[in-house]
Image 1 (tube, protein in one colour):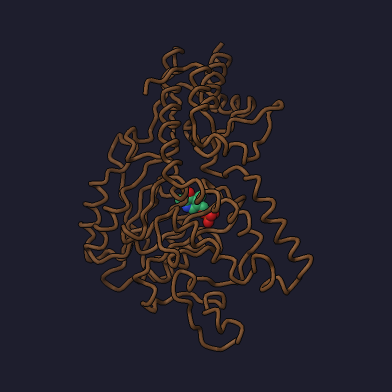
Image 2 (cartoon, protein in one colour; image 1 turned 120 degrees about the horizontal axis):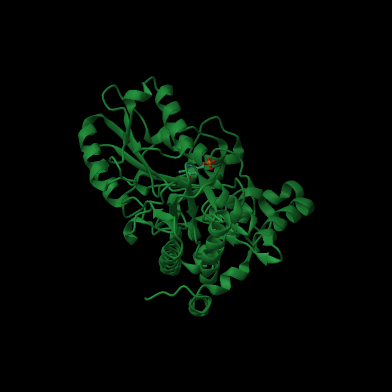
Length: 427
Ligand SMILES: *Cc1c(COP(=O)(O)O)cnc(C)c1O
């Protein structure tokens, strides 16, 4: 499609957008009486209007039923997480039994590593991406140290080549082969948080299995953003937070995937009563008897107030379906890219370098842009003028035009404010 940098053209795209009604399902912060332009749904998704009702239902059941709510609430609390199996299995390409929801992301990755990172004297190394999200780095270091290995030896990062912003698949595969018999686990992001690069999880999983390693993914920036086929790709395990693209609210519960092939394997795990079979959970028996399936990794009583808004959002995602989301995602991201190039051409002294891969297989919703020649003052200007973006050192802004609730007109309007900002700061 041939894009144009005009308000009329953007409005035309909005009129044809089959997801346009969903924008009304969300609450936007206001700037001078208007919705802000929100580019940080990859950090904290907006609040779906339906979330409040789901939370209120739990509050009302608590008020009216108290302890009886565990079994007699409209959505009983004791197995509340089971309601996620259907909708989330569609979002991440899994079987319902492979899904559970609990805790938060880093906690879940730690718990899953108990089962899937089981180093031996000869096979103890972990392969991950260079500059993984800090929480993941701390996790790797503490896991490796906990098992008595030296992080410098046991953690192998796949690096970017000199002068390149993204990691090449061929380099990931070569590293997996090189570490070979010493490789215990590959744990990669599905989408890199800084650059927005999407990794080829199917190929990475095959390569890891070929040398005898387990393969898992941190899907923080992938769940609700990209097409996932976790079951068919034969991924061993994965986890994601729900408050980024999946709009569940600050710090809310995380999703987990454990492949069906491990459900009967009697893997070691850190157990708790909520992972015990439902039939005898409250018999308070001394021996742990895990639920078969991902629910067997549950530990504690469910944080129902944190699950409630996530359920509202998960049901909305299942209703829309990833296919439509991805279709709009590709088009609106391409339109944003076009707008950035247009504005860059219109003004002297700027150079916007998009470090996110330009091919559609390797990118999703996010564009990370190096603002050469601009400083933090531009980011501050945008924030003051109703454009919420995210600033990363040295001078990168990350823009996520989330397909569920951003409009093409937002992209056009962003371009205008960006231009005004640069012009007013360089007068
Ligand atoms: C956001 C993010 C996290 C956050 O983890 P929490 O435990 O939910 O705080 C972890 N890993 C990646 C890759 C992320 O993007």
